[in-house]
Length: 465
Image 1: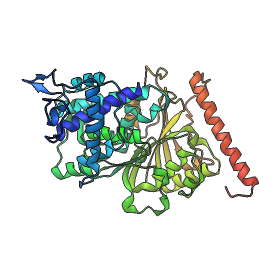
Image 2: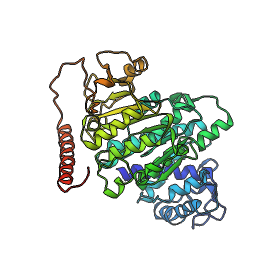
Image 3: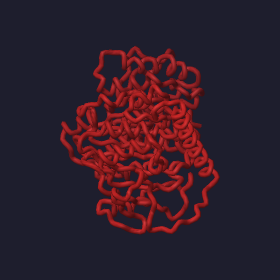
Image 4: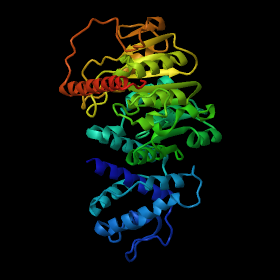
């Protein structure tokens, strides 16, 4: 299922490329009387599909696999501006292979896509929505596919709070499908994204938005491809996305010019990093989430703003590494808001409870505004989180208004750097967790026990923790 949806996305991009860059006249199917140029995919006669010359089956597969894809891969090898969309297309196809094994299925996909007008802004906008739907479906399939997709209502509320503006640089150290960068773009570019109603901006501003605003890293080739494809289909023709492991960079050498105004992210958590990777960080830990948090803290410009999703454990754990990172976070940054998310936000692929930390680089923390999101019904795969769930939070967070779901904690009342969300307005209730939540909690607790055992072992061996 995932491979098929992924291939649908590749077909969408391939057809877009063919319309955007006419293929050379000598680039044709090895069949008699087959049209050249962009008509390779769906040749027409008098505006209708030429069923005789429209290749299908093994002929279409041979052309796509042996001629079209190698040609598009070559876009990156020619003398081309790295910021051009042509170069970006080459970078994408460097990691792409056609995964539709049935040429007749590919024929059907191309015929459907051909009904869209690639030169019409409205149809391109609809195309981006189709692609987003494919990504969402991939995330809903469970397993490891969750890496492609963070729920868009959550991304939107994070962008609304962080409030990126034209002229600022926006960064995601683990871009996945680039949802955070796209939402930041929508926040800047559109008055009403759903209605495709854009703000008036200058030519120079539009160029900056397309070429100099968006930055990110992605480790896995498939996620990298899906993300850059998503950016281009949303109109961001030159995203600065690198296929690299963010954590391999030593953060001690970062200069102010290398930092970003805005950081939005939902980095991987629950993973374990080797000693070699840990050497890149002042505070060593094998917990992926702690390393990413340090990276983002060191990547934020003066007066910059950050919103990041983290697992619950980061807030309450007080062992050496976690306490040291949170000490630096509270003393060097203004942690102004913590949004406590309910369990189930990332179902079906994760039941771990998460929070969103919002912090600015404009001084130390004096007090933290907490908001506990309490949906009226349990979140499930079929009843996911939506925009309405965040309505009250968005209405009150700037005024820091205290309600049954929100409260303020003074920095002097925080002990041992435990900044977990404990709602003082609620009586402790029995939490009946679902089986998948219990399994995730057991896995998380086991990981925490392993960390503690590793620390004890290092102490006994005479190492510094």
